[in-house]
Length: 102
Image (cartoon, rainbow, N blue to C red; front, side, top):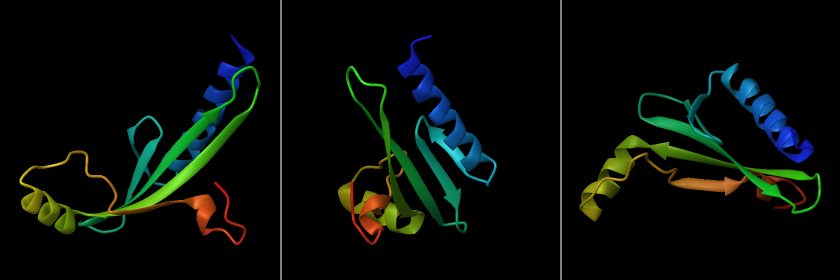
C-alpha cells in the first residue's frame, strides 16, 4: 500500500477510535456528533490537507453546535428542510487557540 494512503488511513482510524470510545457518533466520514441534551449536539469535522508529492498530513478540526429547535425555525423560515442539520455555530479549533492558526 502507498505510504501516504496508509498514513491517512491510520490517522483517520486513530482519531475515529478515540472519538467513538468517548461517546461520539460517526455521521459520515470525518464528521462526528455528541449529544449535549435532547435538542443540542456538538459536532466535530476533521478536514484533511494532503500535499501532492509529500508524505504529509494536516488535520484541521472544526467544532460546532446545532440546536434542533433553532434549526426547525430556520427550516420553517426558509421553507425547506436541511438534512443533516449543519451546525449553526462553528469555528476551526485552531482559531480558538492563543496563537490562532488554521
